[in-house]
Amino acid sequence: MIIDKLTIFGTDNIGIYIFTNDKYTIVPKNLDIGTIQKIQETFKTEIIQATIAKSFLIGIFVAGNNNVILLPRNVDDEEVKKIKDIARDVRVEILDIRPTALGNIILTNSYGALIYPELSSIEFKKIKESLQIDNIEKGSIANIITVGSVGVITDKAGLVHIDTTEEELGKLSKLFRVKIDTGTVNFGSAFIHSGLIANRNGVLVGSATTGPEILRIQKALGE
Image (cartoon, rainbow, N blue to C red; front, side, top):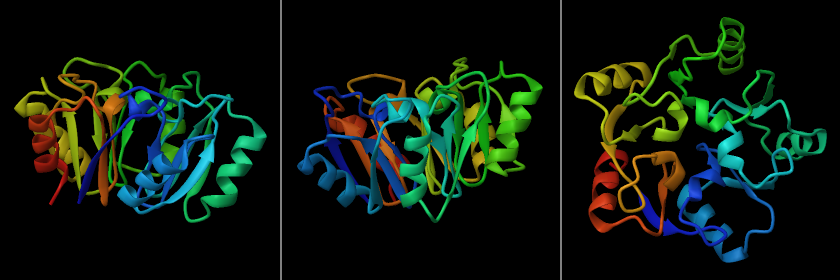
C-alpha cells in the first residue's frame, strides 16, 4: 500500500477537498497536474475534476462507498451530470436531507454505515435507502457526533479518533466488518477525515503528519 504526503491549495487539510472510493476520486477543478498524478498513482482510480455546490470542498459535501456516491441537495445539474458521465460503475444519487455536509455526517464503507445521531427518522430512512445497506446505525465516535469528520473507513480497514474506547472500536469493527484502529493526523489532530484520504490501494495524509503518525496509519490501514 502506498502512503504519501500531500498539500492542497497550501493547506494540510487535504480531506476536505477530496472524496475517493476504490473506483473513482473526485478532486477540485484546477488542481495542478503534479498533484493529480500523485493522487491517481496513490489511489489507482479514475479522476473526476469537479465542484459541488460551486465549491471545492468535495470531501465535506460528498459521502459514499464502492457502490454509491452521495451528493448533497444543493448540488447543481451540471455538477451531477459531470460526475455521472464518468462514474458509470457506481450509483450517483442526490440525498435530499436537511444537512448538506454529507462527508461530515456519514461514515460508511460497502458493509456498514454510522451516521449523525440528530437526523430525523425520515432522513435516516432516506440515507439507508440510498446506501442500500442493512448495517446502518446512528451514533457518535469519542463523543463526537459529526462521525464523518473523525474517521476514514475503507473496505479493508479504518482509522478513527484517538480517544475512541476499546468498547467503541469493537462495535465499529462489527458494524463496518473491518479492523478499526485509532490515530491522529497533521501533528496531533484527531479529526482524521480532515487530514487523511484512503482507499484499499493507498493513503494520502496532510504534509504536517509526523513519522510516528504515519507508522500508526500504516499499521491500521496497510497490509
